[in-house]
Image (tube, helix red, strand yellow):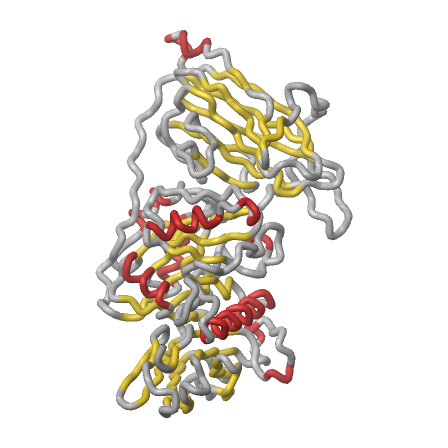
Length: 536
């Protein structure tokens, strides 16, 4: 895991504005809770009144300064007159040297139109975080991360977010340019279909955490789709940070062999979460912290559409990335994000403890006896060099469709794989009854249960079977990576059983482990959700 995988990226060594002016009445902040309102930028609109002035431009500049402790967001009102065909914004900010270990300056940016900046409102027109130093919008096109459409008359707002402020403070400059004239006709967005032919009820492979140039990635959507096919995936979910702008480009890239679902990585100041399978074009709000009591409102918005609310990379160490909203009422939690690391090890441990709580009727995604929180694994791939599909989810679904896949993930009928080269099945049986991953084997507490795990694709790998008591079996696969393991238990001693398959410690690709040399295993290759044992 690296900073580019999780933190909203800041531009490399952004240039400081030349001789920034000292704060004045024009640049002073007027606090409004967690939001500040800066001095407005007004335009004459003269060009709009002159029929021969098409293509003429007007530019306004605002300079100012943020100190440590600045509000999370600052609005620059922009009074847009009629007759504007294009709006362009460029910005820069100072980047002073800071002591080792101290975050430097990072300033995010986006824009809202005349419909306002209300949380969850209709005014959103784009967000690029700290990934771009300029953007534009027109009716026909817009910078990735931004929504094309009319530049209507009214008060727009450029939104600044001082994500990190150095001890020396941050000087900034924002330049807004309006172009007048007739607007070009816009193309209709091409949203992807909600289903593909598929194979009927089967196991489908998919990566549900991916980024493109529409947020802080360097992958184009075309490159992501190509990489997904090469990785042997059946579906992907688009999850660019805090924007829906990529939703309308995925349609031509989907096909009978690849279902593409729309979503969002909701990037708050207190952790990131995934809204998976959202209706195309529907934005999920991100401008809140855990103490603002707003998260549940937007989680419910997602779940009312039958989309999934999933916490992302629980222990990512970068600013604002570690999850702080709790795990109640989520549909799943991401326990494995990109290349295996210490944070994934910790996330799996946290999740395993939640399973134990659910076994005694506490915790879980909805609370109450029998409820529990499924695990997911995704690549969080951003750029060429990142491995799309490593890891991914293998989901038992009635078909290759949005509703069927989300239902399978929500029910925990899934397991996590490092690559499509790995195959696995886990079954529990007793007295003629059988249950698979995510299901419950309804048997008497003292009845003997046989657990069977079949694995392929992990040479010399270590297999672990775990219950609410912890690891109860560990064995090693053969050199060809294949093996069948059987184990017996009973519901009175095991509330559930789940499996892990690990690379050997000597495998250089494993990336090491925090478990220590005596544990005898390395990085994760595959991980299952549990099979629950015994009657409720």
